[in-house]
Image (cartoon, rainbow, N blue to C red):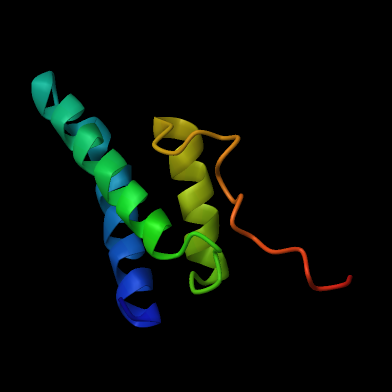
Length: 85
């Protein structure tokens, strides 16, 4: 998956995330289940969080806090701390 595809998929998922409240009953839970799976797929494609731009990284964090697709103690665990500040 290229950097552009990853960011495009994240942007598409963000728009679905914003419209999830329009759904009622079972459709809401099915949409949330779909979003969980897609968020996991995007996270696994870039587990070191290198290729997402800053907007999409922020979106991923906000979505994950809301739907808890990735457990919080694992989120961002692939980031290397080799760089000095």
